[in-house]
Length: 112
Image (cartoon, rainbow, N blue to C red; front, side, top):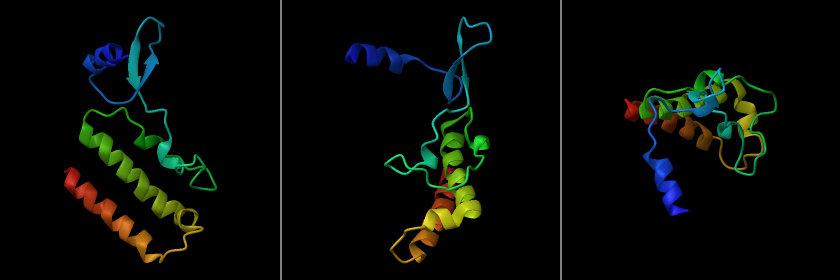
């Protein structure tokens, strides 16, 4: 298992995203990330009641920085457009949610 994982680790791509078959079906290309982990809670339950288009944050990405920033930007979009869904059931002080938004903005500055 370790040898196979090592072989995979040695593979390098020119961008970050999910692998897709190319149009001819003979090779692979890197495209948008398929995983919607940022739309689900840890238990797999959706974080927002209504669907939201976050496709602009799926890549593919040309750098680790742009990949990390996309996740942060998607969180800010969720906060801006679906804040009520995110705070539903939060028993803690809602100031905690605002602190998280500010922390994300700070993280974006660090990415620069």
